[in-house]
Amino acid sequence: MIDYIKGELAVLNPTEAVIECGGLGYSCLISLQTFEKLQGQQQVKVFVHHYLREDEELFYGFATEDERDMFRLLISVSGVGCGSARMMLSSLTTDEVRSAIIGEDISKIKSVKGIGLKTAQRVVVDLRDRVAKGPAADATALFQTGNNAVVDEATTALVMLGFSKAAVGKVIPSILKANPAAKVEDLIKAALQKL
Image 1 (cartoon, rainbow, N blue to C red):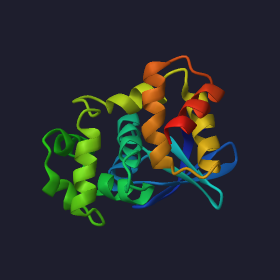
Image 2: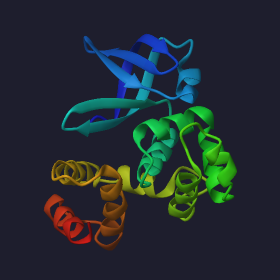
Image 3: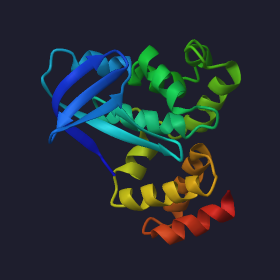
């Protein structure tokens, strides 16, 4: 899995950054807050979320790990896809999203284009206990441990079996809490029982 890309910023517009690294140009879809942080820089480091489906492979890029962690938390909510999460992080800062979730400010979340009342309520209900005042708590624990490769492999396998990434993203953290040293096959077996 690619954690970050460090290199020369070849192209930058409000929705995309192309980073040249080792003779390759990596296209990353970005939010407006990442766009603002990358402006005026030549050498950049962009944290990556690799989105993979049977018919599509995309990189989502973030200027900070905190923003990527929030993105990963948001896409773990049923009904919030990568596009909606990126829209949310373009309309609000990471801290504003965190504050809205902790403060149960549904109207602020609903103010984001493409987010309806039910989705906003689901975001608050699903994430209020998982969002800490610092970096996104569960995502940090889930994606920055030694289990990183294990989680990715298990998630990819489950998605290829036909489960939605959002559903998989909900069960894997609970399995890891119960068994932090779980291997790929353990995660997949446990997830299949819960999905």
